[in-house]
Image 1 (cartoon, rainbow, N blue to C red):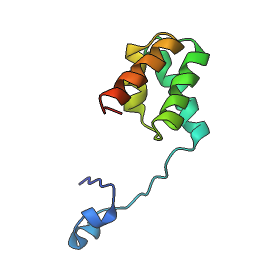
Image 2: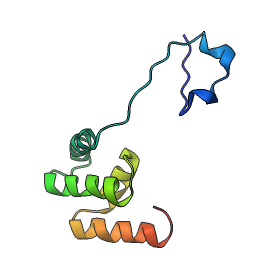
Image 3: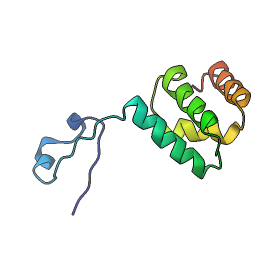
Length: 97
């Protein structure tokens, strides 16, 4: 059994298509992302749901994406809302956003 992934189906050569089953997964809705974020951040020992939702909204609105990697990166550096804002400002200042 083979497995291939791609962001765009154009990235896979046509002769390979007949060898794979294709599944297209849609992007999370904002609400799904928030729910997943709260659950995932509990694993990072962030039990405060308000803080978890704040971080999720910063990712959604401030960074304009739905990235669990960014969520975890910011959460690991931030234990308060003020820390979240400082971390995002630092990322923006140095173009790491």
